[in-house]
Length: 406
Image (cartoon, rainbow, N blue to C red; front, side):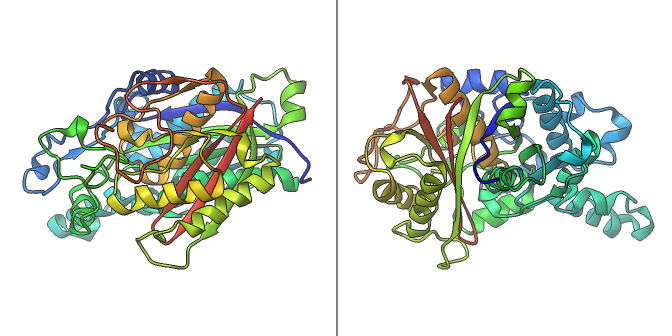
């Protein structure tokens, strides 16, 4: 089944820039920031008081009774999955040929912490009976599978910030293997909470530009001082190209190849020369059949950290050369952790589909080692044949996805 072409027929998202794909894409192309000040009382004593919160609260779209049974990450996954499913035309696929791969880097942490507070204050009998299904890492995937009736398998990769991209790579393998004809895949994350923020802050991984939230996420800029935490979900519908064409589906792009590797280097730091990333990108190229020179655009992982940003630049030099136009949409969305690779895949797909590369904002004083072409400050109109989306995660996870024009 390795010769099977796999295409993208549906897109769904809820992000700090918009409650759906259309509004998110419009904001990305316009170079708008989704980062703002945390107004919650609990944020006041934290060293970091900014984040990229959802533009549209999921409780606006899910009935109140149901929201009580769902962690916020699960709510977002359901909203994005239904949007992607409808966008794909609700494929008439046998349930035994429909699979789901939706991951989360951290899972239902806010549920765990909130229920622990309840137990400490009021005792164990006040803990919600829905606690376990709300906090379990496979909860978002399980709920999406239940909503759609998927019976070919429901999977939940957990690979830190590479999760969303790995989910899409798994989906590609599932379709090629013949296990399913349609796979709903992506990532979700909702951990804007004092404990994760305090933990990331203690690592000195996050920007402390509290007075200028919209300028805090600044990939490749000399003044970058860490990432900005965001929340959101991105889901895509993937299916066999022959069945998509047979039913007259709208095809956004082809998922041409994927590569996944691990660094074996450090639990949080990437290899300084990006060697694991190089292997992932080269594996994706081999899988896709494209030459490195065919890659016209890269949606980079570039989180705005001092070390990670430039390690990726080294990797890109070695793996694809200098012809591609780079961008980091994290400059606008913040870092969506387990959802990042999925939302950024959607941005990559739409860049191919529309011939428009969203800008990297806040790149005012580029790092001296940044010697590749970046679409800084404003969108770039470019005809593209193929594009690369990179995602890297704590633990040394590297995922590279290559999308091609339909």
